[in-house]
Length: 426
Image (tube, rainbow, N blue to C red; front, top):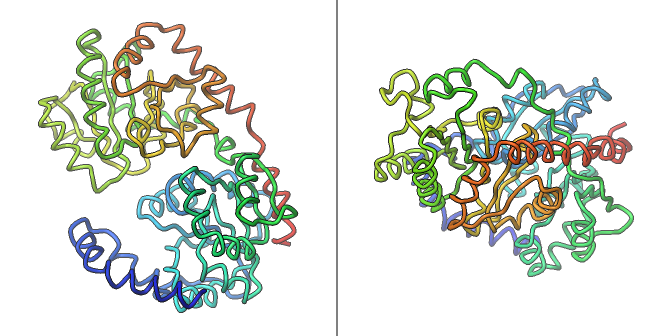
C-alpha cells in the first residue's frame, strides 16, 4: 500500500511541478520553503531534550493551538515545543502568536526520505496534530520510530468524511497509527469510529478555539486608531467587517455595500480576502465597481481618506479588526466553500451574519443560531439582513452579548485535552 501511495505521490508531484513552479515565481510562494519541506536547512534544536512537535496546517489550526500551547508553557515549562505549518500565512501567524516556541518550521512533504530527515533531526517526544492532518508515510514512520502521534481538536467535515470513506482501508491504517484522538464533538467522534478509529483512544474533548484568549484593551492597537482616522470612523459610525472572503464572493459583498449605503451612507466596510495572493485581484474588482477604497498597506500615502471601504491586504490583523465591527460577516459561506470560523468576532462580542454554506463549521453555526447569537442570510438577503441589524442597536448589541456568552459556556477543551495528552509527555 505504502509503495503504491509513494509512487502516486511522486508522479503527482512531477506532473504538477510546472504549475507549482509558475505559482512560486508569479506569486512568490512555495519556493522559499521548498527545500525545508524536503528535510534540508532545518533549524538547530537542542539535542539534549526531546521536544513536543505541534503541527498546525494554517491560520485556523495555529489559532486552535494557541490556548493549548499556553497551557503547556504553564504546566510543562521545561518541555521544548516545535511548531510546524504548511501555509505561508499560517507560518507567519505562528511566528507572531507562538513566538515562544523553540522552533517554527514547515511540515515535510510526505515522502519517506523527507519525513525521516525531520524525525532524525527533531527526535520528537510526541507529535501533536491539530484538527485532521493525516499523511500515510508520516504516520507510518512515526510508528516505526516509536513516536506517539496525538490528534487534538479533531474534526471531520462532511466533505472530508466522504473523501476518507472512499479510501477506507488507507484511512483505517492511518488511524491505527494515531495513539490518541481528542475530537471536538460527539458527531466527530462517531465519524472517526466509522472510519476505523479505536473507541478506547477516541475522546470528545471540545473545541480548543473556544479557549482562545478573549480580546482585551490591547486589541485597541495603534494601527486601529490609524484605520479609524483614515476611514473617518466615529463611535456612531456603522462598520461591517467581512472576514476571509473567497473568490467569487466579493461581488456579493460589494453589491451589499452599495445597497446598504443607499439607506445608511455613513456605513464603512472592511473587506479581508482569505488568500494574500488575491489582494490585487480584489483591488481590481473594487475599481471596476467604481467604489472609492483604501488599502491597509497604503494608509498614509493614499488620498482616499474617508473612503467607504478598506481592503485589508495584510496577514494576521483580521482578529483585532473585529474590534471595530458593528457586524461581522463570515466569508466562505455565501458560495459553497464550507464557511470559516465565527469564533473570532464572537469573542469580540459582535453580531454575526453568515451565509447558507457553513458545512465546515456546522456545529459552531448551530451553536450560534440556537443561541440567537448569529443570523443566516443568502447573497440576495444579505443587504436587508445588514440593514435590519444596523438600524436596531439593541438587537445588534444583544446578539453580540449572546455570542460572547456562547463562547464562555463552551470553554474547557484545553484542560481536557491537556489531561489526555499528559501521559505521552512525561
